[in-house]
Length: 85
Image 1 (cartoon, rainbow, N blue to C red):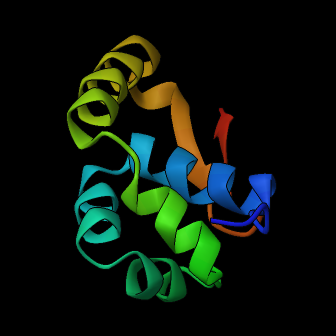
Image 2: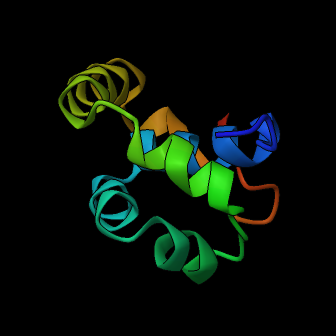
């Protein structure tokens, strides 16, 4: 994989996956389509990076984060990032 990965793009989709288990499943199954469905284009290198994420670790970390944040954390679809309300 070359270094053609936009960290902000990856942070956006991974952040959404952390807060939205349904999106996390879709992202793991078909990263390009899942990202496209939320208005984000992933390059081939970004797709490879998403596919390399350890799903078990992401799932465990996500559950802990969602548990600690509760309903205060939301995903801002316009800004494509998580925020606290």
